[in-house]
Length: 308
Image 1 (cartoon, rainbow, N blue to C red):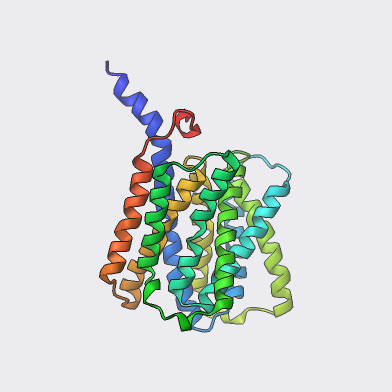
Image 2: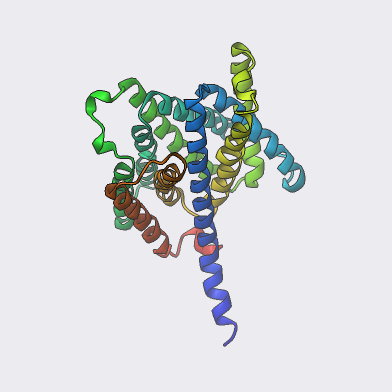
């Protein structure tokens, strides 16, 4: 009688809720890094230079972590190499989109990625998404639009080149989520991410060699912020996100990640005095409702999460 309560619920719920918690921490990290990156851009830092040096900082940090907690070495295979290239284009496109567009539009375009993930999952599985997933997806996208104040921006202010870059960001983010799920069970997350960032850093080293030393980033004023972006915006969140995908399906992880614009808006409220409107608050409530409902719904019996 005493054995029933502690075993059955904990085994079935623990992995899923741990994965959810990891995604929430990831969201907070991305939101913090986004605001710091915005501050750096307004100070004259070039987006591609920040993308490159933050990737190198993350690689160095992952190498240190791997020396303590990493498992055995396996040869890098094609998907891991591709994931590294996807990460390069994801971070670069994200920073360029923020430079080219109002931040609101850039965020909305990035967080159309869950639509692509859900559609890809349905295509591969040859099964239509469940009603709950579709409702959560619609609520989260609507919430992102409201939080980002997209409806308040005049159409003539839109930079269509920037929109194209922003849509590229969404495609890269969706591809990163899908590839991460495919690789999540192959090795320990820290091993996978170290190889991913090693590929990305090699690319950025070649790029930076053609541009010269990024002296702007190395000033005493900027470098501490750059260090935070490398650790809090790259190393920690992507490691947690990869770890969480082992416990939460990719389409669910993508939808929960749409909390990031709301968290970023709250942080911007405190840091830069950007007040939240009622529409932004309503949008945040919609996102939280979608993410919560999605996680409270019990997985199907055949789900690998249940078996953990």
